[in-house]
Image (cartoon, rainbow, N blue to C red; front, side):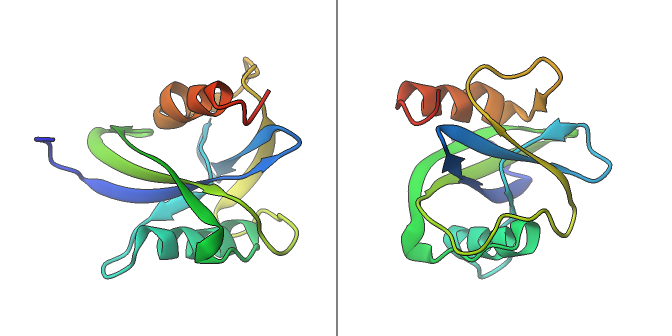
Length: 138
């Protein structure tokens, strides 16, 4: 792939009752899966575990992360930046999901995306259809 990656992020797909968890950060209009930027000298799995703790107050062991895919797109809200997103299925977690840090709102959705939900491009165009195709969500 011959493109400059401006941002490298890791995201987690949490599924409960055949619905997928999405989050909206304070001051943003769009929803994405929980996760965030991979720091220098940090693996994508470690970054995701850290972000899930910071954003949702849950603990996730690296062994509970299963690769789902690596996706590329313009960054939602920063259309001049190109993003690489490593996405993992979160098989299990400890603790109760509680929005924290910059997360203002969470929702559990299925493939029938409500019209009032703006979903980041990778999650709308790549992740959500793949979850439906793999029969992981309704």
